[in-house]
Image (cartoon, rainbow, N blue to C red; front, side):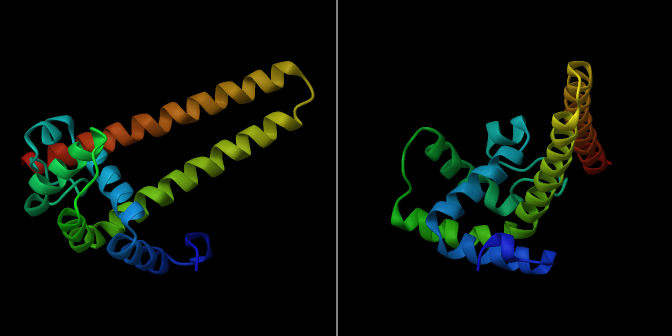
Amino acid sequence: MKFADCKTKKERVAFIREAMGNDARQAVRGMMRIYANQTADEQAVEDTKYHNGIGFAGCDATLLSSFAKQVERGRTLSSKQMAYVFKKMPKYAAQLEREAAAREADTKVVDRVIAEAKKAETEADYDNAIAVEEAMHKMVADAERESEARGAWSSMR
């Protein structure tokens, strides 16, 4: 079965969970994705500061952040480290699925805008569609920043 064959969120989460526990390449990619979701200060101290529903859980942050930094430096993980990654990463399947679903939705919007632009008969219409695409990317980025800020703010209360 492929990820694209999964019809429901539950199936997608189960697929990702399975990959995180068995496929070294996917588990490391997932770990790096979750690490990228950590705030800059969380990455710096290799710990969780904000309980915003993204990034590593506090109990995993130190070790998995350390592994992620090791991978960033171009080093490979030992078999013992990979065993730990296989053990811990399946619990992040729902977070990874949410991210994949958001990327898929963004891609569909961008693809639709591009398709409309290609249909446009004049260059001005094409330029307008490109401007709309750029505006949509900006809106998505602004919404993500606002969501992260709300998550950080609610965790500080």
